[in-house]
Amino acid sequence: MAGRIRSALLPSSPHSPTPPSRESSRHSTPLHFLTLLLNHCSTFNHITQAHCFMLSRGLDQDNLLLSNLIHASSSLGFSDYAFIIFQLKQKPNLYLYNTMIRSLSRSDSAGAAIALFNRIQPMGFRPDTYSFPFVLKAAAHLSLLGFGRGVHGLAFRLGFESDLHVSTGLVHMYSACTSVHDSRRLFDEIPHRDVILWNAMVAGYAKIGDADAAREMFDRMPERNLISWTAVIAGYAQVNRADEAIAVFRMMQREDCVQPDEVALLSALSACAQLGALDLGEWIHHFINDHGLNKTTPLMNALIDMYAKSGCVWKALEVFKSMKNRTVVTWTTMISGFALHGLGREALKLFDRMERDGTEPNDVTFVPVLSACSHIGDVELGRSYFLRMKSEHQIDPQIEHYGCMVDILGRAGRLREARDLVRGMPFEPNAAIWGSLLASARIRGDVELGEEALRHLVEVEPQNSGNYSMLSNIYASHGKWRDVGKLRKVMRDSGVVKVPGGSSIELDGEIHEFTCRDGGHPSIEKIYGVLGELNGQLKLCGDLMEVGCFIL
Image 1 (cartoon, helix red, strand yellow):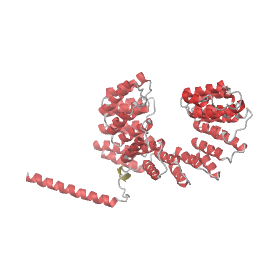
Image 2 (tube, helix red, strand yellow):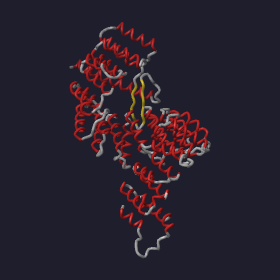
Image 3 (spheres, rainbow, N blue to C red):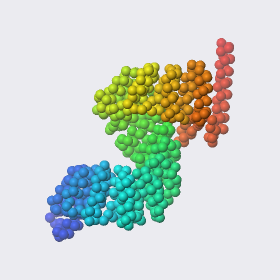
Image 4 (cartoon, rainbow, N blue to C red):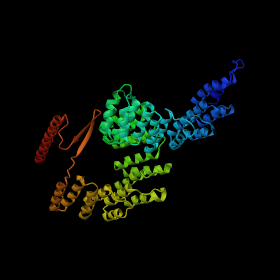
């Protein structure tokens, strides 16, 4: 880099042309060379070299050159240094203010961007078409709806209400602050809308979980880009409508000019994990490798999760082993994959490796660790990990960790201890806690505990038919058929409907879902035909076995 700096700034031979005049040198040549120089900066050392060059020649007083330096610094992640450069300038102009506000709005220093915007008018300047979008981005980053409304009012008073850039910033701000009604009202008033404005509206609906409205806007778009597709896919994945997320992702695949980015791939992998869509997940894995994205840690973490939840835990382990840079999320996801498949000892061994590796676990890590203890049925080991959370890692157990301990005690048949733990929790027990107790009561046939758990469950999730079914099974195991009948009557009177069971399968890249008593599948007659043949063959095999046994 130093060599490139020297070659760009010094004459190559004594026969070089005569340098331009001082005025021309100040405003033309340094601008050209510094722009070239700043475009090649990639480290903090490069930035400081460029800054020193400007200081040595008095070019730090040129607002345009200083703006380029600030922009280059913040683009490389050195926003604090960029802010120091700005503060050293005695008389910054509006352009410099806008550059600094823009730089800070994209970082965790968005509050400083707002403070700078508030200084513009007292300094004698008038915010322009660039000032408003940048500060609105900061307001969106911090979800400051009240401040955003104030900026909206100021833009209106200064005559910028019809400016497309300002309007787009306002739509994005309202959407980011989940005030989608205001976004839509503004959107509908804008006569000429570009793809950025449409994307802001689609993303706004997706953020509040209104996937249908996001899709309706998406379908109406006159043109789409990658951000448009990604917003809809992420919106469906966010509300657990994985089949629709995958369907839109496949539509995007068929668009020749659109390739998925990291956000789209993460959302698609999340949907694959929910549905167990292994074929598509493997396609995404190949795509990641082919495009050199296998060093992107969040994507690799998502692959581990997808493979584990799709039943391929050992494939998940292969991805884990291939990663050089593992975060706490990487370790936790793999531990969770082992625990999900009942491989408790493997999960605990991996946790020990994680600690030896020097990676500090977080509160999420201990959930699958405690779940692993439950799978292997080791109460004391589970209690040990539960206590180590606070003593060794300064992590206060949350309600999820208490739920795991309740499950450990319940599976071991220590129901009284489990109940006492629930009563002594520093939290109000939720449905998961009472559900765990009810499940343990069903396994052990404990009528009293089952009735207590159901009383609380009826309060927090009165329409969950599964809870009634578990207590009904406890009554039935004790021959209390009168109580079974009473419970069913309570269900009828309360309008509780038993949710039919369902399953799904991926075939040729398409997800097929089946629900009990639902004959809506387009190939249902063929399916029943095959099932009929299988039943006939099974009956024939049974008859032959009986004949064989009789002959023997």
